Image 1 (cartoon, helix red, strand yellow):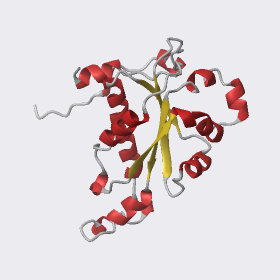
Image 2: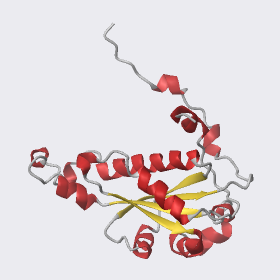
Image 3: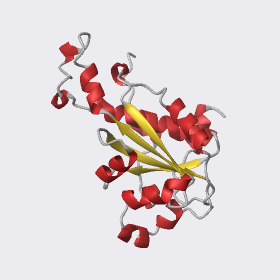
Length: 199
């Protein structure tokens, strides 16, 4: 399967069948995903693999009772086969860009980053992971960091990091409801590409 095939096939799936994904496989794929680019070779992205045996524990800190009881997709998501937390260490980037070969950039000061590359690097590593999962015939969805960050980081032993996102991984049960966002009219991909030509 080519990279173009993987990109075309990949979809977010939010309803899993409950089968566990081997933790060793997830660890291997997470390690490979960290081949993605990293600004200044700062290597400030981390991935924490959560085995299915600890999934209930994860959801107890990452959600609240109201969500677990009432969210339409809660049951399907909570049948995931495993979880990967993607975190970053801003301090690693600030330290790297304070080193002699980078200090002139001024990026040792967090306020000088127009785009904080710890988030950029985490996003690239996340996309790499999603494509690797697709290659291994697994499905996944990204759960953004919208709430409970401190609880999740403390539970994961990553209190000095920032939570970028959680990737829920597993096998589909065929009951996924596509996101309503897919029905939104958007410009075709080709119209979202600009070309500045010399002709």
